[in-house]
Image (tube, rainbow, N blue to C red; front, side):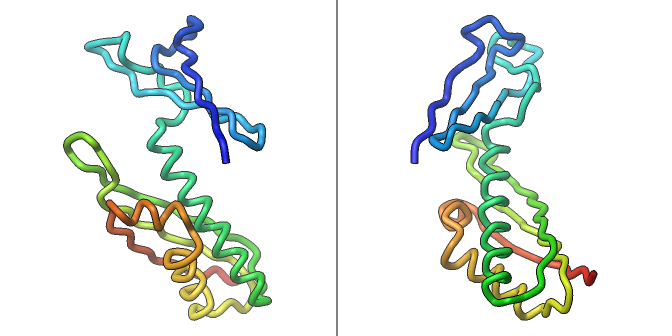
Length: 149
């Protein structure tokens, strides 16, 4: 897997701290820093997600992907899955994630809470590389709700 991240601030864009990542699969992700009123040359223009936000979003995507795939492979009638992530970071550098809570909303027909709980657990214990990696610095908790269609 490869990715190239390039600073866009060097090309005279509005943001002094903008970056563009081009993934090995050919997709592009923009990232930016928060504005810094005291030192504008060090801040972003709030034109894209922060890099740490993209890390959190990628983790949500990784685990939601697993949950849907596990349920589908179990022949469950899953129709939708979303996960809302909330996090806390360390106060001092490096400001790693220290707590992450993931709340899943799984929609389907006749889904059992046991099957959803098992899919979430399997993702976090075995399959989701991102959450397993972040679990080295952060306490990760989960919850879920089922929505019948």
